[in-house]
Amino acid sequence: MALALWELVSRLGPWPRVLLPGPIAVAKSFGHLAADGKLGAAALRSLARLGIGYGVSACIGIPLGVIVARVPAVHDALRPVITGLQALPSICWLPLALLWFGLSDAAILFVVVMGSVLAIAIATEDAVQSLPPQYALVAGTLGIKGARLYWGVVLPGALPGIVTGLKLGWSFAWRALMAGELLFVAGGLGQLLTNGRELLDVPQVMAVMLAIVLIGVAIDRLVFRTIELKVRQRWGLLRSA
Amino acid sequence: MLRRLFARLRPKRLAAAPRYRGEAKIAISHVRHSYDKVVALKNVSLDVHPGEFVCLLGPSGCGKSTLLYALAGHVTPKSGKITIDGKPVVGPDPQRLLMFQEAGLFPWLTVKQNLTFALRTKPLTRAQCETRALEFLRQVNLAGFEDALPHQLSGGMRMRVSLARALAMDPAVLLMDEPFGPLDAETRDKMHQLLQRIWVGTGKTVVFVTHDIREALVLGDRVVVMAGRPGRILNDVEITQPRPRDPDDEALVQRSREIRRALRKAEAATQPQGAPERTGEDEHEATASPGPAVGPPPGGAGALGARL
Image 1 (cartoon, rainbow over the protein chains, first blue to last red):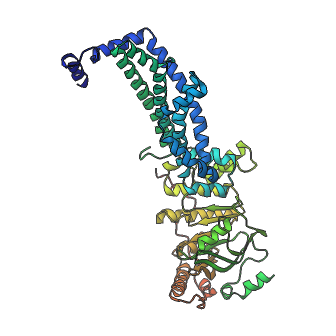
Image 2 (image 1 turned 90 degrees about the vertical axis):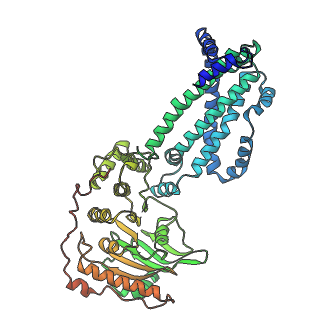
Image 3 (image 1 turned 120 degrees about the horizontal axis):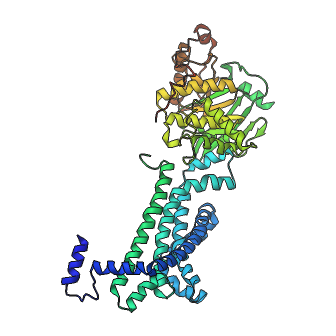
């Protein structure tokens, strides 16, 4: 229905068709890009970057969140900084990244990490802070302490919250990556998008946008929804397991 | 020595001659604790002997839980001394295991994993932990539920897992804070039967906090009646009825009447110095027959079956 309306507006509307192609043109362009492997290569390139950047984020964000939650001195020192920086749109890190790392993959990775690490850290901190005090009492009376307390009680207890944070962090990372790739040419979906603009190939621009949306939704649905559901089921957080 | 002397002098100790002699397992002497202005415990002294099942009974706010948490090491009293096996209590320790109102299970672990996770703090191999966990789950009639998750169990079953975990940890002293409080009456009765049966086998020293007179009388060797404002010991009643006990046993009903009267009197008295009522005269026990155990058979696995 929406597609039909779109096609109709594109054909009959007052705008030139070059600037507002219909869904058929976009789908054709999508097919072209997919067929000659451009889209796949660009998507792979972007996802590889995302994988690295996001991995680094998770590896820093989760421990950071736990430490901020558990060590009062660190909490007092870092909590305001983290919340403050979280208000900064991730693309604002790009100029700094370019100065520090030059026009390189490292600069983009930096932007991706800065875009998602804080969200993950904050969600982790929140999850750890809101652990039922019961766990601490039980662990104390059972003599569970040290590394076993963290690996066996604190992290699993906070896991549902951490997974939510990871999901949020992922969508931030994806956005940051696209913004970064758009602003300077380095391969990936963002570049393909810029390419389309430069060639005035509006169907290509829209096709790439479509691809970005599809990848985003697919990972959110397939990966994070599934993990979240599994965790919540196991933890007994769903009404009917 | 001095502590003994004080213990003798306390009038409530006239109530019943202590059945257990020799060294006290838990010695509480002149413990005082307060939260801000509220005196939670005022000069509380109590000896618990090895293998004794002592119930701390009293209305809410009488300091019974504070006393228990002090025994567990979660609360450090403002003054006084608490020793267990002669050693002063400092901080929580699995040797003084505390059981809570909630089962306190880790929801992401299966029933068996909840036990083995706790047991791994002991110098046991993985296989030993496993066998021990299974053995204690069988004791609480939960064989077959090893791989269930806590949220798939009923409240009573969760409590049995908690009990199995506590017993498997083999603490010197088991401290229980109204562990059956949230259960419905029928499940609670079953838990009482189960606990009596298991406890008789282990001979563990237990301190059990409750506000339920019936529960205290069914379970305890001694019922230490406490009153609040300030928290203090009112009475120390010895219960000699054989186990398993029937809560409707006439002697127990009589006892519960006396205790209720004492509690009411304490509440009515504005001055806490009112003479504590003497209870526990032996004539009740002498005249009343122990009464047959009418409750469900202690080993009835069917009666304690699954409610998923």
